[in-house]
Length: 166
Image (cartoon, rainbow, N blue to C red; front, side, top):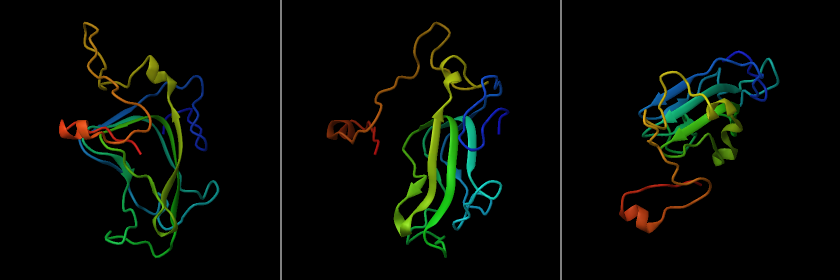
């Protein structure tokens, strides 16, 4: 938790100065623990189990998602259905190779509700030791190829380019 983060709605104070970036080559999971709301352990403060994140998160070859989705073939099946675990209160950004699940509709609902806010400070400041978007000559290293809802295009699939949002 960074100083100045509102634990309920994720808003930052104007004077918030701490900034963090998390980069993974694979998946980033929200663990299915009692502290993180396992088996419907939601409530009101101070007994809620919301996940509060203030960071830029990048998953290069995986997803940002919940652990143990309460599926039929999953090693973990909640004895209480639904398995609503709380909220993910996120202020920052999420970049991922594939969109991961943080909530599923199976068994009456499993996972977290999303309370997401973009951290506007990323428009002019990046976390220390974080991926740059341009090199020292100003050439762009990363391009946004698509934003919003889309589906796989057969031409992209044939060329092994996968961009999918849903």
